[in-house]
Length: 352
Image (cartoon, rainbow, N blue to C red; front, side, top):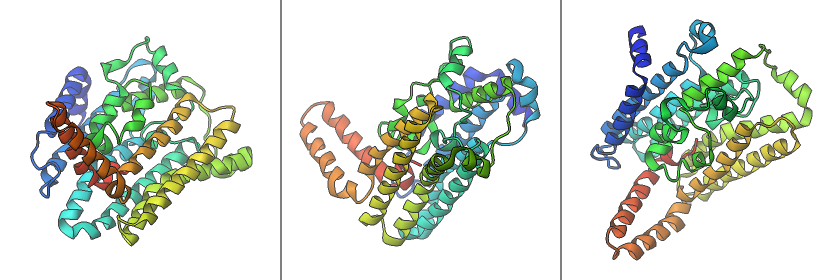
């Protein structure tokens, strides 16, 4: 393992080039949205895991004044665990459907979502009860990433934007980067996910170490406003699990899971908006995160029963409209095919 770490550190640019090439080749795999999807999804998940691990190795590389501290740290961060779980969740869904059928697959999906709830709850506690950024995949230490990037010679290492990095390997991005990662386009922050994690840690190491508040001390310091914020964050964390459990109970064609999930999103984001309005210490990253969460509401257009009753009809109408137009008609047909295929997977449209 140490030899592999040294190889990754010596070949940063080569590693990123291989990741980009591998990501493109996965779309050439056959049966992408067919009943024989286990093989392609297994390849994609494995490549995604390697990418996440490589970015983590690069983020903790001994550079700058944080060398000693980072070298001494051997624990796996919650952010990496969440990313690895997200890399695997579509494979879990496909395997579950192959083995147990469409109805029983929701049992394993529920377990996956429950695991994410536990990891994100731990990440929330570990952050000192700060807003989770990108579902806990990014570290929130209260420092704006733009300031950190500016301090690092005014450039973005590796030359890879955050949107590209996330759209390469998160499950939403692989299936439908134009829609399911729609919220990511609102971010103007550059740099790979794990690089930003390292830069956040850099800011922590350069500043005096402060103890993170306990739940009781946090609520004591912030009162009702702090309680509303924690309620909003827990609603954001629990929303995907609630949605899956309701689908498991009522079915994906029922309006009740769809409306319940949307209600949780609306109330949670409303509480967070109120918290930000009343707070004097909201960072730019947290404001951007709230915008990202709101933009992800676009995924409700792609979830049943709304998709079957309304969105699908609009897509078919657009396909027929552009069908006579050369090139445009072909591209529209392929886009509709991609959207319809991706919509059949919960993990592609979950936004979690």
